[in-house]
Image (cartoon, rainbow, N blue to C red; front, side, top):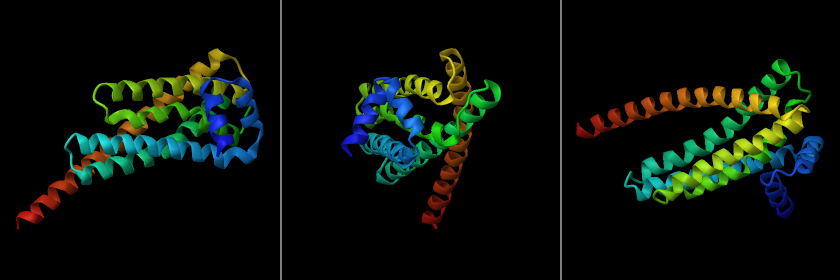
Length: 192
């Protein structure tokens, strides 16, 4: 666990050598996924606490936690595959999907700041700072994994991020409408 934490810290500090190590070591694929899961759980806890302290009720808070974890992990896979595709097909980078998964997994570490979302005002800023920081580490991760220059890495990350944002927006909108419908249905059943 110490070595994983050490790697996450090095990734957050934009240590290029770390990204090269992670890119080359296929045994770290599961550990990179573990980083994403832990970061997503931290975000889920932040959402849960924000929901409870914001008066949404425990049920909605639990749903917030579950959605944050699931969307964090799914978003990681979608972003990695889309970024891999954009980087290799559009910008002629050289990598395999495993290299992209590993480097982006460690690059997601700064998103752990979303655990602070429950703190009024400061929490939203900390979460935003973590997201921006993760985008910056993502640029370094993509640059090292795809073996091309920073400009192509920035463009790849932006294109990948926009596509993931749209997908996430659509999925959460559908889930939100579904949850609202379920809530209305359950409310109608209770009145009978």
